[in-house]
Amino acid sequence: MASPAVNRRAVLSMILAGGGAAALAACGPPNAGSPPATGGPITLTDQRGKTLTFDKPVIRVVTIPMPSASLLVAVDQGADHLAAMHNASWVAMRDGTMGQMFPAVLEIPHDIATDDFTPNVESIRALNPDVVVQWSDSRLTEPLENAGLKVIGLTNTGQQQDVDAWAALFATMLGKPDRAVQMKARSDGKLKAIQALAATRAAGSSILYINRFTGGLKVAGTGSYNDFYIKLVGGSNPATGPHGVAGKGMVGVDVEQVLSWDPEVILLGNFDNALPKDVYSDPVLASTSAARNKRVYKVPLGGYRWDPPGQESPLMWQWLLDISFPVPSSSLRATIPEYYGFLYGRTPTPAEIDTMLWLDANGGSANYQQFHGA
Image 1 (cartoon, rainbow, N blue to C red):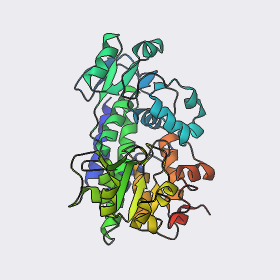
Image 2: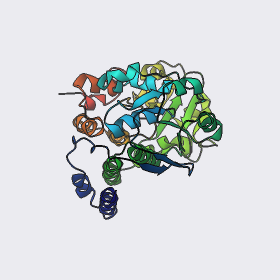
Image 3: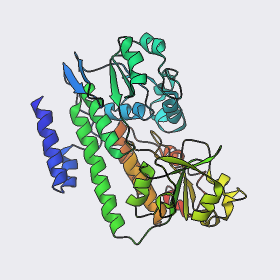
Image 4: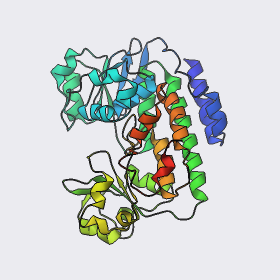
């Protein structure tokens, strides 16, 4: 196991030294598969601080936290080791591109936990998993462990560092430790590129992310990942400005609050079914600058939702930068196939990219033609 440690140190030292391109080159060609799984035993420490040991790389994995199923597929470059997942993970796969790239995932059990992540222990035991991935809350992990199941506990700060940590755990348990190093190098390199590009631009737009539109408005407040990427591309988030909301994460607001902010851009998340047309036709919100100027956009849905941190976040950053500073023709369409090749070993078709970017739903919004194919 000495070689992976050397590789990790080498890649991370190059990143810290500013050699992002060299680090990516050291990881091999973009479409290279992850290296063959190494033999066991494997020992890892999860985010609870609990140490787990496996005799060999895991074969059957049940995932309960919503982002973990698609991240496992990305780390593994396939879905062969995914034994079951949360229903919300399955819905994202059904509605996004994951189910098109890997149709078999739609046949995987997805009734193994409630909406609040409480596990159905008997259903999970019947699947005979090598490990269950679960949130670290003892109320969620102890029923599984009391049933004799091995559990990897994850914590969630809502930031990109979570993705790096989870990918490292998954890569280790699969016997592919270098895969997480490759993924982090790619993400870090793209982050630096976006930061450098955004630094050359004038102040960006006022951008409001709406997590829930139907059944009561919820917006991204302080500490949210959405606030991070709005500011990453040079935008401002009125919900965290001088007249922002109290509280962290997703915060409920009334429509009058949104009117007072008068955002220039509105982003609609993938946690409900709202589309730009719903804002444009809303008798109140239609008066906002974003609606009047047709700058309301549904956030893309690819291998997973692009709203929260994930393995496709670098694509989200590029998309949002081009939303904020429109160009005649975005390079995003050319970037997606290459990045998907790296993540999943699959290249989406032009039609799948159209679906991913909500080309029809966003087609009536300003400057969205920059994402059209040739």
